[in-house]
Length: 259
Image (tube, rainbow, N blue to C red):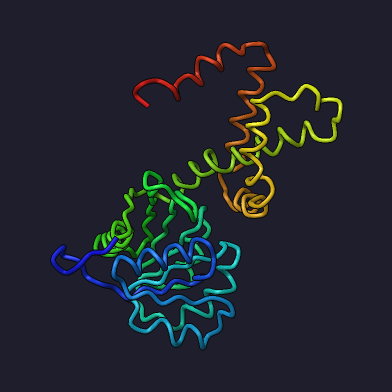
């Protein structure tokens, strides 16, 4: 998506920390294509690397696992000038925002691209969670950067984000995990496998094999995860009591025309 000065576009110098990861590489490619000056850094993330890369950057995006924040931030923050924007793209927001704000007194913004490294155009939505020192100008700049690559953005608090992520991502992971763990090692079930079961099995393959370590960490790091499990368990209790139709009626909300 190329833009130019006639569109009111201002090129920015952006630093992507973790540029060789799948999402870091995607952001590098898309922001470069949009006309921004993108500098990518990756392992080893030494102080010397940050000293060379950070001067002059408008924003620094941490495209690293949330669990690596504590190790990376002390090396990175001394080379920020206090006006530069520090942002992350992790799928959990309360903990990373708190870590970034504890380490850096300048503007901090949390972002969560709600898509993977090979998104469809309709998937390009980004949640933006303001830090305490993030002014409207700072938030507007971050949002404009994502719009430059074709995304739409919306704002949320970190708490509301994590509650939603626990329901949409965390609960999907845990319930799929528990379902297939329950049925595992029962060879006698194999002759009874149906096409709908095979579809569910295949749709869960990547989640429960390749991505399992990531979602396990995200589930544990999200303070809202246990709340979502308790709510889900309450609905299982409804089913155990024989009131399945109550759940069928409630679940139908998703397929109403208004959705």
